[in-house]
Length: 77
Image (cartoon, rainbow, N blue to C red; front, top):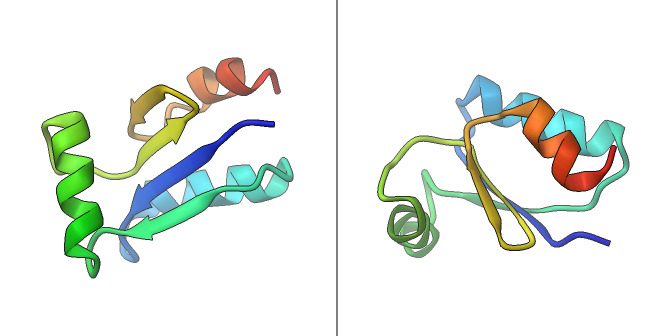
């Protein structure tokens, strides 16, 4: 079981695609809306050094953007 966290915004197309991917593959994730949660936005910026979303953290790996191939490799899907 992987620990998956997605930092996203409601208007981000790639954020929606990432969440659909995890839902379709029945992979649980925690979502943080960085448009409305200043604390999580600050956490995301400190973690990545940028403001782009989605930021997907799988265990200790941080992926900026929805790189489906990389995510599949990390999850063994």
